[in-house]
Image (tube, rainbow, N blue to C red; front, side, top):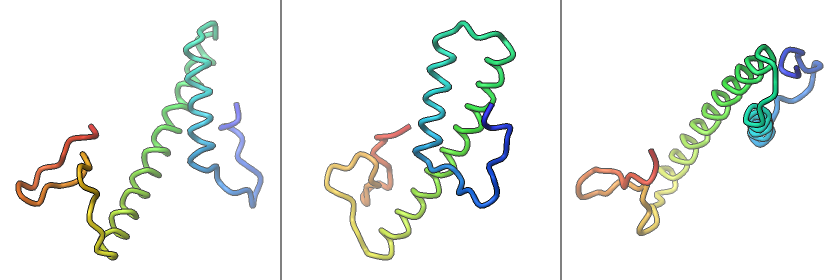
Length: 96
């Protein structure tokens, strides 16, 4: 399994897209079935790790976008379901 062997020194870490692609491949393998129990558990464990990494990257990027927006004085687009309404302070609820 690729995640057990550390990359050679000087190798850049995988990008978000590479992690997501690997996660999708793992999900596909698990959904197909037919794998013995131990390899299935190993793939599931690798997938959980990748999911955590992807979420952390997304949170970091979202924070960066919010900081850049605040610095530039940008306003959300009209009708943005994720924007905070200045009148009531509620979010649009576009995401869960």
